[in-house]
Image (cartoon, rainbow, N blue to C red; front, side):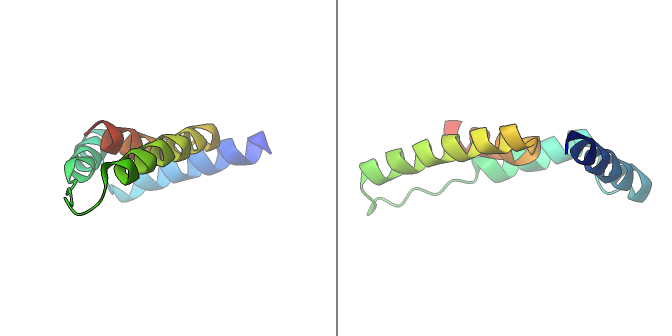
Length: 81
């Protein structure tokens, strides 16, 4: 199973390079911009935001365990924003 994960990561990285989709620096910049776009609705109670924050951290931890670092980074950034 580990072999399949590493092969799929390698394939995905090759596709990014071959197609010239986005370089890592640009991807990080875009992720940071997306994460900082947080709108606060003052009609939503603070405890709901707190609970959502806990869920974001939990999901980000799951993404890290799965090796999906891009999504984990996005959620961690969104949490600290």
